[in-house]
View (tube, helix red, strand yellow):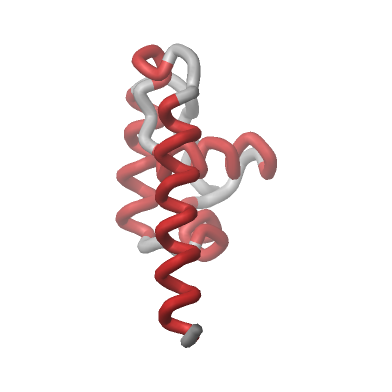
Length: 85
């Protein structure tokens, strides 16, 4: 098997795992968070207060994406944004 085939297999298995995990999540309608936003929330829970730039670097995402996800979390009452001194 070539490396590309292995990568495709891993991607497929990860997608299937993600779908299965999503389907068994209790109270899915209550949380109403997509996977990416949930991962951001988890990172904040583990690390505590952290800036958007650091989050973007650690999650390997664009700052605008992290900022948008953080705004969603704030709107839903999961986090509070505080100015960076």
